[in-house]
Image 1 (tube, protein in one colour):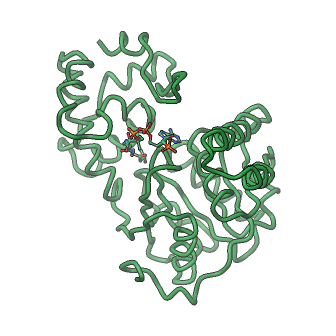
Image 2: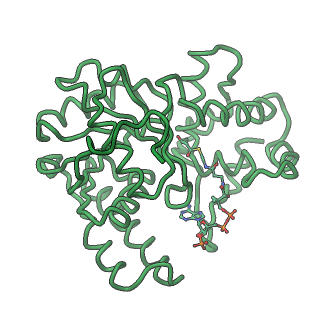
Image 3: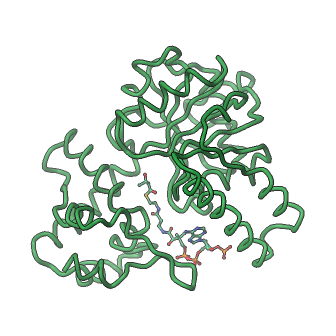
Length: 303
Ligand code: 3HC
């Protein structure tokens, strides 16, 4: 059944090569899912070789974990690894037909990326943004071809979370939207079309919950108590663990967007700002059991 708002799939174009701008954690997770499910070449770019190598290394390590768990065949593992390459130059996207950005969550940074991309990619290459909260309409405004931009918002951890929010900006074409939905299907994600409103749907709901917990920390409840108190609510992860996994800067940016749009209904946490000021770009660390955890020094900072 066609998802609500999805144009006829006959309008969709095949995706034969994917570009991923950024080689951070989200970008690396995206690259893995694209290579594994679409079985097409995926090239990641970042500002220096070390970051690119780290991103590609992450993909290879995740494939090895899947192989160890027998979730992927040895052939598919080798193929997936070979499909993911890295480059420090966006020229590598010249023959891509779908380029998604997962760079810093700031409007101007993303606009600059797209302006640069338009000088490189082919006329009909689709541009997608994995923004968590920013306006896709604003991002499209100065593009030469605004009809090619679409929001394609994944959730962390990308390999596991089934949902994908697809965001249509006013000028996004039916062909681009149809390709986005067909790509989502090939990625085995459940795509829903959402309005281009601050933080779309899921983050708007999620950040209410996380914001209330953050407000409790900021007002003196210690982090662990506030977090543990919510455990019996049937959440798959407590808000504080989720914050650790999503990363403080992303969470803070999303709350700022929501605060700008809806005022005091959304809390902008001073404690989260303190973490960032203390040089903690993200607080997600992975334990030996492969699960995210919050290191003690981070807990100390928050208490
Ligand atoms: N990367 C890859 N795979 C992971 C993973 C990760 N970070 N974390 C868990 N997994 C895999 C495990 O390997 C396991 O796979 P397997 O069955 O093949 O062994 C499977 O997920 C289930 O993991 P576990 O049994 O260890 O743990 P859980 O049953 O607790 O599930 C979870 C883990 C799916 C992450 C669950 O805790 C959950 O749903 N948490 C909430 C996540 C969430 O809300 N995400 C949205 C965040 S908001 C966002 O991303 C938007 C952004 O814009 C801010």
